[in-house]
Amino acid sequence: MNLHYKSTRNSNLKVTASEAILTGLAPDGGLFVPEKLPTLDVSMEQLKDMSYQETAYAVMKQFLTDFTEEELKDCIRKAYDSKFDTEEIAPLVKVDDTYYLELFHGATIAFKDMALSILPHLLTTSAKKNHVENEIVILTATSGDTGKAALAGFADVEGTRIIVFYPKNGVSKVQELQMVTQKGSNVDVVAIHGNFDNAQSGVKAMFEDKELAQELAAKGYQFSSANSINIGRLVPQVAYYVNAYAKLLANEEIAEGELINVVVPTGNFGNILAAYYAKQMGVPIDKLICASNKNKVLFDFFQTGTYDKNREFVLTTSPSMDILISSNLERLIYLIAGEDSEKTRELMEELKNSGSYTITENMKAKLSDFASGYSDESETAESIRENYEKTGYVIDTHTAVAAHVCEQYRIKTGDAKKCVIASTASPYKFVKSVMTAIDEKYADADEFELLKVLEETSGVEMPQAIKDILDANILHTLECDADKMKETVKGILQV
Ligand SMILES: *Cc1c(COP(=O)(O)O)cnc(C)c1O
Image (tube, rainbow, N blue to C red; front, side, top):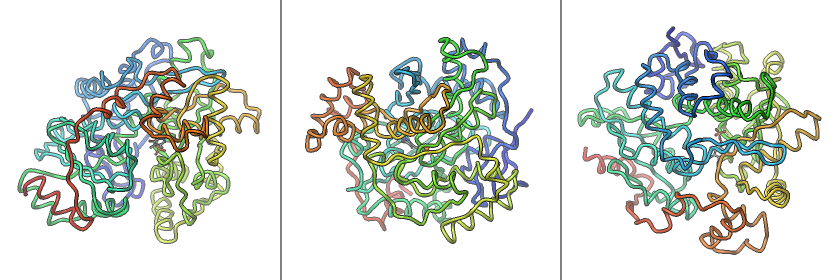
């Protein structure tokens, strides 16, 4: 059976999985969704004994039906290899009565690696399948995390180049070092004199520049994006939820068919949507608990049915969740609208024009799979400290938002089902906030000194990704003004 993808804003538009991966965003501005959510064709009994890679194949082949077995297995093998510091790839750690699904064992010690280590291979395979002969140039604007994960994913992947723009004074010291020390013959990193919005606008303008596209094509290049709305990022994420459930079963932590809850620290709504897809595939998940930080636009949406981004944007200690427009929510909206692309388009137009929209009562009733909560800054810090004092386990700020929401949910509902918390970053990545939460005396300490302190505190060895940047050479020093990004790209590609 061949599964096609359609746009959330035009159900008549149908493309294959590889076309959806190549295109990223549908031409009408919608997101690609499978025309029918597939189910697993292997039993939990079988999944129990599978490796991460085998599970990933069992899940992904149901979504990417125009890939051959060999192509898909090849992508999986290249993605989930020794770049991860554990063969388990996404280990499930039991702490007290909670299970932490550690998604941070890849090259950049945050969960974006789970998708961005495989996307380059899905993309180059898709290019081959569709007879694209141009070299694919990935352009990314980053406020820190995505840029490094994309660089690490695309580095030295044949048939691709990647150029990342970041705001010169807008990312943390560790984040900047991670990027400017990136190795690979096909990678370029540019610091722009401007903020993240300038970088993002510049990249968007280049994607829409038809003249530039022609000039590039003449030299054998075409642009593509590694954006989180690409279906090629979403599908690989479904695998770790399936794997987590199978592992709970294998470790006899749950009985066959036992329902569990999943708590996800949420920003763009990609990770939690993957959990929802896992549930639709047949994994016995009861509630999908959406955890927000102080930018609680999603919490308010689940409470009221109104999505309203007209509010103050707050900078928090969980910056990867500081988001007011959760792009992937559009895929859920489409589903609860009964796959009505006209209705979805209408609501998204409203969001664009007025910054808010309200779903119908009928749609709201279909959100019963979800629960939501949020954590403010002091609750997040307290969650880190309490967890550490009670159990010795140190969690990062994003994971702490979810841990707090999980606890609140249990108290409020009395729901005693086992909980899996998606643990999205290593505490080493946000060492300053983490150590300051444990003891305020670290508030003024040097970030690099604190890495050692965290190692002693947590008893978890410093990840290779951190050791690497401590003595790596700076390889990228290019800077440009915000209005010179196009010239800079042309210079790099020599067009
Ligand atoms: C990107 C990110 C998130 C948010 O994930 P979404 O899929 O965008 O909801 C949470 N935590 C960390 C550490 C991240 O990097």
